[in-house]
Image (tube, rainbow, N blue to C red; front, side, top):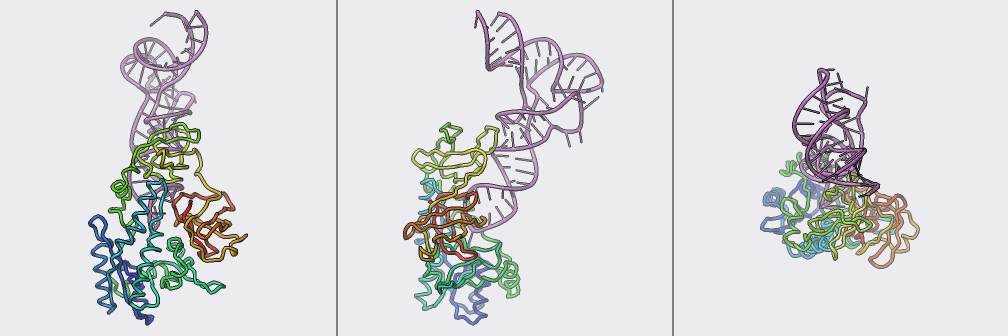
Length: 344
RNA sequence: AGGGGCAUCGUCCAAUGGUCAGGACCCUGGUUUUUGGUACCAGUUAUGGGGGUUCGAAUCCCUCUGCCCCCG
């Protein structure tokens, strides 16, 4: 059981116990810039909770994996003019991966977290991640790149719960974290300031460059490509007075940020790399599915063509979507995640 | 050293002589959010200077300054 020390995971521990499971809890810890993540308080809450419940608790240092699978790629992506989705990578390569490793060493069958997702068994007998009953908290997007073998061992005790129910349950069970604040922002950048983190690690991504329109006209200067994302509007400081401008492309070689005027730049089609598929390629053929290019994004009707083992093409049926290279795109069949990948 | 035109938020524009000079973009802040962005909400900033007419001037008159255009 992954126990961060927050409300959700704390509630999951007591719930699993109540259901009669033999539970061991693990808090994944690391140090970022001299600051412990999660906080000392959260770790202490987790320890205290386990002590009071009689649950074994482990603090697992995941600093190495986090650096290699999340932080490193995060900085690298920005330096290449892309916009990474660190939480998706973290869930797959750090959180769930570490928990499974620990489960193996302890002889545990399954791993659980406090994610708001549901698990659904398909007509082919394969278990997949699906949207939580509480749609407003649904985190299936963040778990869309879990491998099938990971999902097979995954448990999602909060699948049917709402946040309010969890808070009430935590309160009733006298869990100290009941009133803890929601986490937000990148966990590894102090104060959530990812740009300060990047500036220190990749100063080259903060070299000034030109802001140009589609005809190559220079409209302004910028303070580094790491400050921009395709689709971004604010921060360009373009004062033509005739409508907003949006970032349409970022070129790391020339350090040029291209912008277009008027409406948000949307893509009708784009490719996914490092895609994780939970269906056979043939299954996708001609099938009407939905894609989501942001955690809070609306699912959009689309077709998927599998081009290779980890490569697919997405073709939107409607007006297109804001698709920033480097971001995660989740593919749904209704409520069920059938694929996930990185926007090319 | 002829003639004509224009000067309003940071930018681009609006305002029959009459409510706190309006909007868009930018910017700032907030909401939302286990990424970045988007979206939504809110907010700051202006009548080039000086005179005059009028109860009242962004608006009419004079002048200074600065731009633009046409003809020499």
